[in-house]
Image (tube, rainbow, N blue to C red; front, side, top):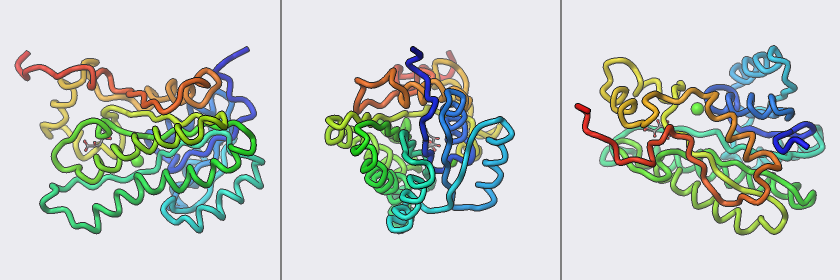
Length: 260
Ligand code: GCO
Ligand code: CA
């Protein structure tokens, strides 16, 4: 028996059109899962579906915003009708706004909380109903270094990701008795379009991250595949409410002076 086999499983990945979401989706597909992805942008969705299909994976897509609970409910019902079930939910869709707290428009703060924290709540609540009926399910919330640490410019994002860590623990507490595992992945600093503005050569943050990460490099999106497969599979059936940080060791260390 292969504990990591996902054959016959349906995995819903919100925002699985690029970056970490796409890498996690590919990991799940490589273990046998059928992919269902979401986006708010039709062209991005088409592009992503073409990519998955070209790789030989079974994938379909739906256009909706995870913060729109009415539309999300309709879409989840449609997905469950077409695919019979959702075995795995990856709450990946998220946004960031990098502005100092003193200057941040409250409206922007609310928007980040809405997408990064309320969205996962809405999606989990919708998808768990079928999971409870089937007495099985895996929910994976994509957290962040900012679930544990602060930094300049990301007050809303850190608040949302810290909240998502606690939402993970709370949902795990409520749903464990139904054989549903709710866990999180906390990516460290990964080379994606999201980090592009802080990764460009010449931005001191680029060098800071490389020296702050014991592994000495930015993460590659593929570095997330193994943990995603693990948390989506039977191998993790007695793990609940945990956040696994995939960070090249950042959270293990206080760091070192820049001249060492
Ligand atoms: C930042 C943000 C993000 C990171 C991430 C770290 O520092 O600007 O935290 O860009 O991608 O979520 O885990
Ligand atoms: Ca992204």
